[in-house]
Image (tube, rainbow, N blue to C red; front, side, top):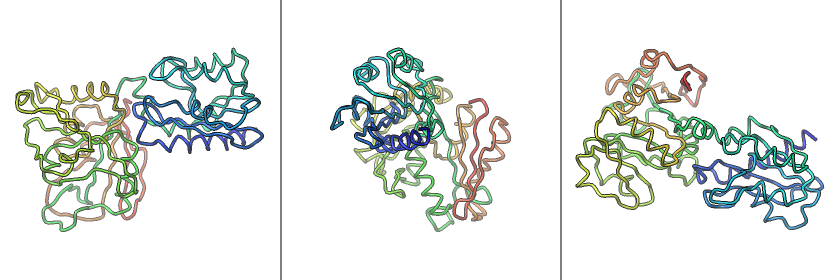
Length: 356
């Protein structure tokens, strides 16, 4: 039975992944309903306001659910939000068993639905493929329990620790394989944060085109001195939602538009405190910080960074903009190296903050 449960929870995981990039601030959740060892219905949560995965599966069932088993990646909700509590709908169905991948870490749920279902007489199994299920929503628990947006700092760097050189003829210093890996990671983040100088100089797209996914995360731009060039690709794109953090002295000359919102800051030194609170209030669960150098350094000084990813190239630039990130990491002494591997010709390093 246990191997069979793993098989069907993995099917539910596949369902959940269909909505990757669409559900935040809600988690990815998938469900399948099995009867006589065959899947008779599937469902996944498409995003805020849409029915939850188990309700999608229940509503889509082509036959009686009596004697069937519900497999769901995350414990059903037990409270009213934008949709009714799912546990109450489940209680109306004569399921033979209910198999749950992991407990919902949301304090408003956190085992309550499991207790309700067991009290109602259901045979409930919890914790099947739990580690795999938790990988669906790696930053959700931190957001919901610690009231904090997860901040990952990403650096692409040459072998001799430069991040930019005017004399280097190519656009990228890292390999195609590293760029694909980066785009895979971007696909799991709600937003990307950069400084206005990076927008002005590099004119980046900051999407996931290398993995052929039409996902364009929100863009956060630090522009305290109001130097952003509004002719650049991202700024002009009406389909990219952008938040610009800028000095409040520009409040009277800068006006919101549908795709561009301003957050006004009184003091540059309080930028990261404002960013931290504003991101959480906007329901932004995870942010990848991608530069430039001043932004990266100020983020580290804020002591709010949870993780650092370094893509170190085999290329020596010899001159340009120096950024010895590993010396900076050693200086702060609160990051631990968790992973080191080769991606293409590059070396990838992943550090995690010990205070998380």
